[in-house]
Every structure is written in C-alpha cells, then in structure tokens.
Image 1 (cartoon, rainbow, N blue to C red):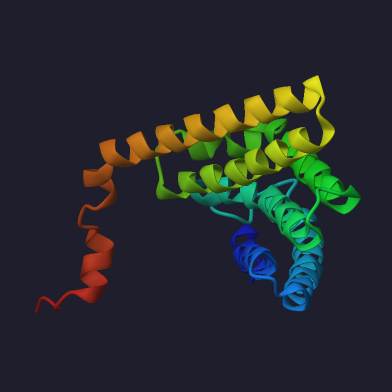
Image 2: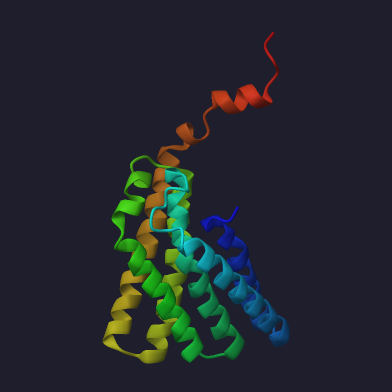
Length: 193
C-alpha cells in the first residue's frame, strides 16, 4: 500500500542521479533522474488525492508528509548536478518543493496531533527542510536577489534549528524510545506457560 514513506525510493533515485552526475556519469544520472521523476509523479498523484483527510495514515507518522517536498527539492539538486547550472528546470523543481512546503505548513491541523508527543518520525521534518535549504542556497547564488537571500537564510536557519531540536528531543527521550515494549517483547520473547 502506498503511503508518504513510499517516496523514500524516489528520493534514493534522485540522490543516486546526483551522485552519478558528480562522478561524471551523465547518461546514468539522466536515466536515474528520469526514473525518479516519473516514479515521483505516480506516487504524488496517488497520495496527494488522499491527503485532505489524512485519516488513512497513523497520526504518529504524519511528519512523513514532509517527504512530499523532499523529492522535488532533491530533484532540483540532481538536475543542477547533471546540467552544471541551476537552470529553469532546477528552479521549477525548487518552486514546486517550495509550494508543497507552504501548502503543508498552511495546514497545521494535519500535523497538530502528531506533535503532541515526541516520536522518531519527527526526524522526517529534518531531511526535507535541509534539502529545501540546500536548494535555496543554489537559488540565491543563481538569482542574487534580496528575496532569494532571505529565503536562503530562513530555510538554512530553520533546517539547523529543526535538526538541533530533534536531536535534543531524541536524546532527552532515549529511555522512552528504547524501552521494552510489552507487546513487542511478548510477540518475540519466549512463551510463558
């Protein structure tokens, strides 16, 4: 069953495309990029139609919805590596990821229940924001505009703050996260007779 976590394989294709481009394997990079973007299109259309209610997805895993904008942000960086410049396609992917980010942030009720109690799924906030911040850096370097510089500063600062916050919360909640779960241990442990 498709869920927002299904986008991890799309992101992997796009990261591999960027890596291949950095190593000089342009044809391989283009192939991986096209596979990743087609896969993203299919998953995006499938999942975005189910987003309005979000009722089919567990509340604690809703931070994974942030992966919606991680794929185009990663695609923008991959295209930048393939072409060697932050051209129109890279900008379009950046703007798509920016639009999806804003549309998720404007729906706080979707994520409100998931942030009441710390969960490991909160790490899904860190990765997409970081890639959006990296995209904003490339965009600001290309455009050389005050608005682009402000976006770069906002997203870079937000990325660092979210990373540090989630890291500190993970450290503070490590005992709760690593505790013995009676349901898990009863299913995997020896049977009591």
